[in-house]
Image (tube, rainbow, N blue to C red):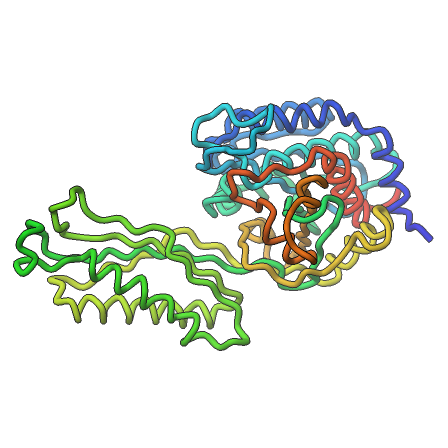
Length: 413
């Protein structure tokens, strides 16, 4: 038997303005904006929320948006979408490809904003069917890990009621039409680490008079690959990526320093601390072995916490999604190594649920090599790829997923 929340969600989304929502998505995709610069995106979302009847505040935490719809007694439910794009040059070939050189919505945040706007409109239009308070948040700077903290620090919950539950969803690769839920740990922590190796520069013809930081950095990059393989237990998931190495200005100039940029992905504080200690030790040791004139500088940048769903909240949303979308559409993929700052929006002790909506176009999925789901999953364009292009067919279902998740927690009228 279908639950009241599922039946109401299907009713409220039966006549979505799909064409207008798809055009909203195409418009957002054409005009991507980097973290903390989401002025046009935020203005568009704010206008849509005001039109739907929400009391709307702009400029929260920089470019953040929050809309409030009070609709009688009942729980306060927060729905969130992130708004920022990435410094990626688009290669999708779409007719609505990015018009901003070197910037692209390569992670689906344009789709997230569209889903949020559609859900806000549907729930406002169907307010006779539920009671409570809706908070609709357009969050900046998820990619840099700054946005959620900035909104909270700017007094988000001094301006609007504190939520009783927070909900968010994310576009992901996979055959369009699946909903991935994990009732517990779903995303990992992320830590950026920068290392500066100090050498002694000089002419390329006289290496004996220098301390070459490029050679030391190369040894360091290679040695760092053993941190996960030899210092983290096989039962503990962890990733160490060297994403950037920079040194020098000319072919025959030995530089005075080299810079290495790392990213760590971990699922526990204990593993993170162990990896950080290993990185410090290895960097210091390699520089000492090379005779560097100074110890290396090891500094920390963007930091994301783990995302741990409240089990009861996530199961409630997963159950209604199963009713709304049918058997076989909801599955548990287990925790991923990706990271998010969504949990930073949650006040202490307030439950939240975060899930994925698969969005690979059917033709792309069918053409991908591989005999099973995981092989195809590895072959199709993923988030942050210059070819990442969610299927427009997911616009309506994504709205329905947010609406049904909200109704699973709001009080029936």
